[in-house]
Image (cartoon, rainbow, N blue to C red; front, side, top):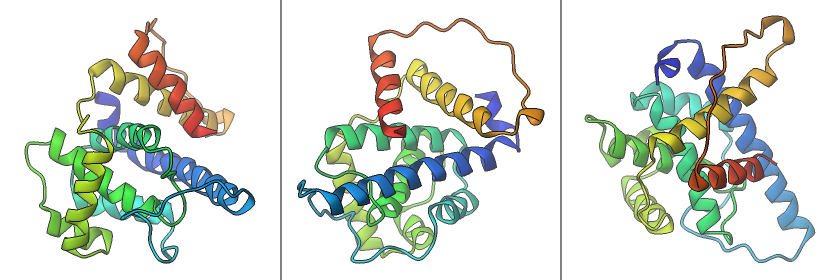
Length: 200
């Protein structure tokens, strides 16, 4: 999408995605402490919370991965799909960083013609190559190898992100672009509803 190529969009997208994931992780951390709801530990679960913030981590990935901007939207789609297919593995502060590096790497491999190997992404993510390989494998199985993102699904997720980013801007700085009428089929409507649930 042309909007993603605008140099001012990616910093806003990264800030919004990190804020969204921070809220989700905090909410799930609280749920885990308050209830006895079983949440499995997985290969994504770290022994301790990483000291780097989610926003700094996403900025690091963006700076060094050199993947297309679309990869970050597709990575968000993958995270949404993963959490719905793996309800016993909700995003929390112990797994969000590993899920992020894995989802961006997977998106880059699926979308981009040129991408770095797992060893490079492991260095960017601050983990070993062996761990990166294991995370990728577990992530793919967790997604059921459902990597294709249709243009309509991509547009639905990106439109949602754009709308939410616009709402976060101060009113004096908001420029409202002309809207076109968008109709969703059942798949996109379902993903839109799932996104709203993820954002809550």
